Length: 340
Ligand code: KG4
Ligand code: ZN
Image 1 (cartoon, rainbow, N blue to C red):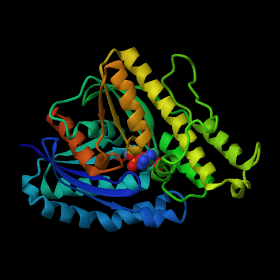
Image 2 (cartoon, rainbow, N blue to C red; image 1 turned 135 degrees about the vertical axis):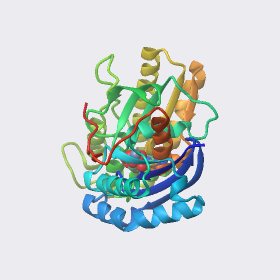
Image 3 (cartoon, rainbow, N blue to C red; image 1 turned 180 degrees about the vertical axis):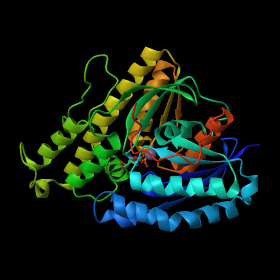
């Protein structure tokens, strides 16, 4: 058995997990910073890194206690190295390096987006690869061709806003609170998806990239009036707001589903996996389920508890890297972006 301690601090969730063999989650503890950022309508990087600093030591202690494990029984420490808010990443990476040194354990830096793809495999008995992985979160919208845990090829990504970011912006246009995804999801359930015509940006015919900024602007003008950036909200009834949430969700979901199916056609795989915060979206889960069933494709949706940021997926992905020989030294540095 190989036991990994996972640490995640890339954005606004401080999370620590202990996972055996990439699958048996002994504990997965997450301290959300929701209340700290809510009044600002978005994540404030400085506040996020301070909160990680306050929470992380306690969470590590608690995780070891809950998993009833001593440091010498941990085989490696996996930590989110990239991408994310640099100040937040630095807290996790520094903590992981300190533990690796103090406990004399190997260190493995993990790509957070790749870990979102692996999160779909945590509860499976076998590996889902080869597959197309759709990773949809607040910071990323990416399609990958995954041949194995360490053979992940990027097929396409957003050229502007991420899908989750678009959800968050729509909720702020509508003044409904933060974070956007779950609120729009709930309101969409009571709305009509065909009530308002909104654009589906497909880009060039063969493109697997995404663009959601035009859709966001269309929602903005629908609410405030063409060319305007304020006013008009008071004219919308509760039903109008629900209809807009449903129509917006459908526009995002249509593009995500269509591009995922394009990626399947391009790669010739028979399996789709979906991860990231937006993978919790009920309309996306339903429509992908319908399309994959119609096309005879296997679909593995990340379990709801592992959709938003969590350390179980970091420990799981770190495990597969570790058993394939990946090791980082204490020179490991956090990176805000993945780069090339
Ligand atoms: O994966 P995640 O926790 O953080 C990043 O790595 O970015 O994703 C957070 C994003 C937020 O934008 C949030 O609004 C979105 O996931 N989200 C959802 C839902 N739940 C969370 N979006 C749509 N529908 C949901 N049910
Ligand atoms: Zn994430």
